[in-house]
Length: 386
Length: 245
Image (cartoon, rainbow over all chains, first blue to last red; front, side, top):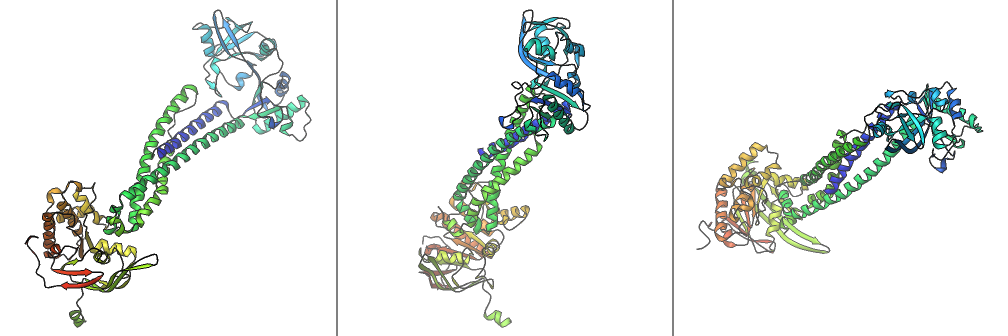
């Protein structure tokens, strides 16, 4: 019975998490748009594992300039990220500083709460200016308006020129904690490097064509001789929003397989438990079975009676499982929505019905053997049974 | 045709040369030898014999719980010798009522539910089931016990419930297997008198017993020993009084 409860609860929770994850991914897509293209550095060898943008250093500002010449993209932005201490007077915080350029807000539309975003001259002239995320601004300045104030990032002084409005999370990162600086300043003054971590772009037409265009431009820039266009030979990795969705989908299906296995094992264990209960019941009620047969019950009627009882047991377990699973789903949904925007509370109606049907099927599957034992009892022997 | 009916009136039960033996492994154990027996509509017959005499086996065959190894069994003129499992169940359901030595009531069910039980297998609608159950319970004198659980009753009362259960659906015949075996003398006597009463009302009863005193409550006694019917004392005086002379 407990096995059936856990099994059915797992089914409900599994479907609920699946639904929530799907909703989250869909809302990410809706937010970001499917025309988003990423370029990350890569060793080029797929067997070396996923690309690590913080080790590879193959992308530079020249690549961005080259990509901007192409007609395939409406916006191109280079990004570099570092985590450093940021301070204003006595207030200090350790947060993520992102180096971006003026096209960043064309790729990820962001409202300004106050002040302005970077313009082209800030990037080109290495202006030491910064735009704060809403939470970062609160941490450093409290209720004060930070525009035109000075903050220290590492040991360099920056002027605050704007504050982003609330942005929420993107791919599980809290954007409101971040601080933006011109990419050129981040490279020169904060990190002392000349590469960037990744490039984001908005494609104008077909995303797959745009991805190919990126590859050819960057092969040309990086002097890679790759006439067969083998992705493995490149020193960069191009992906689109839909690729990211696919990867998340794989993670989701692994989770689903895991929970399904738990559900399946629990249901088998529960089913065997039900079978034992029913076998004991058949033995205890041997005389009753004999009596029912003497009163004219056919084998089929006895079989039906015990099958119905087994299904009733598992169905009751199923109902408890549905209630428990729904409860856990609501808790997961509630906790999830505290940390992730777009993570909703989903109670899968389909899962409730599926759970009850599965419970009944388990009842039939594991009730058949005890029920058929009952139906085959000889009425004379059964009536004499002590 | 008319003469045929007059000369060979149709008996309720007509056993002709019934043999029954049990086979276990290589050994065949005969239980009934060439048993021939007629029971007419409206009779109250006691089949009497010591344990191991084959009387229970005979009742099982008569009650469609078992089939004979050989011989012919006519029930209401129909040959029922070679019925299938399902056909036997149908006969038990429609033609036969049983009363057992150990009552065999459903312990967690009320008196009314116990009596309703056989009709569930007969597809009687629930309203008619309850009406019928109340009628037979009144007949056995248990109208005041309808809602009691069967394990709250005395032995005699339990056997009355069992008789009521056997009576519902108006079976052609009622078989009682040692109905007084688990009862004290007084309530046993009451049960036997109840059998006499329902017999007078037209029910055919066959009672299996090993007690002569109980058998004497029947109108006819058939003795059985070692699988042979050895005595059919038709002319005995039916006992009406109590066991103690």
